[in-house]
Image (tube, one colour):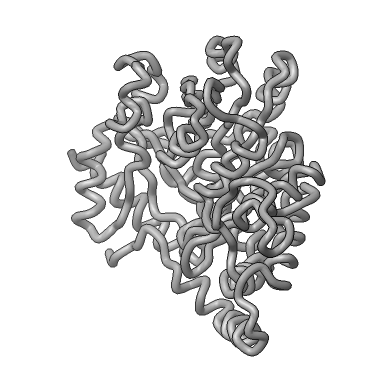
Length: 369
């Protein structure tokens, strides 16, 4: 049948090799490597991609979350409602600024934060809602923003897996206090190392974030507040600017593979990703819910097909967060996903034959057992 990788980063490199090398050479010839023209132009281009006004390049996606929380004035004594079914960095960032993550269950269809459960978690200490646009589909921003407005809460979005996604025609950060992105190599827009960005619409907030990323400094050797050292460098920005030109096309390729998976798997005992009619997903991951998930994963791996489980341990069961006091069974939809979710190969350049190979092996597992 042949091997099918989980992701193939070489395809992106080969497709733009000459342009990336030229961009790298351009930076080397300039001799300016931190927060220069490439970063500034990338900030403008990513903000425009999202429908936001300002972009602020930082060292990585986690720093983007931390700096954004801090800049919004979220700190000790504050509660931030977020999802328990996501990567650790989301809750970690809240803890890093001294606030408390308050988990609300996810929707069983889209895996994203359930606004109704979030409403039940609001207390007088709640200051913000931090939805995660998991696997490349934006959360229900209509319901989340309405909830936040009703309770005078801030909304900041973890869009680290969702660059290029839309909700009702608008991108992450367009209708909230802003959104954070990661440019980790495996992301839909990834560089050859770490990188991140925050997009916002408020000018004063953008200026403060730019200070915070350089030790709280507005002018060299003059520091207005305690900040961080979290700067996006010119090499990564130049690479990302080249790749950004292909982002929409690559995301469309992901949607085409997802549609093929949907059709090939629709009569099997798996649940394919559900897409809200108001959303335009970018399929950072194509994640099914499968009966006998662990056995299926072992079968696919034995046939040379790479797949992954995101995320095997919900955040409230992580050792570092046990002190928050959540109990087993408090988030039934999250618990179901932890047991059943399996992410299949998904990447730009993936062929129909590769998707058909994956589907054929899933069919063999269920029909042959």
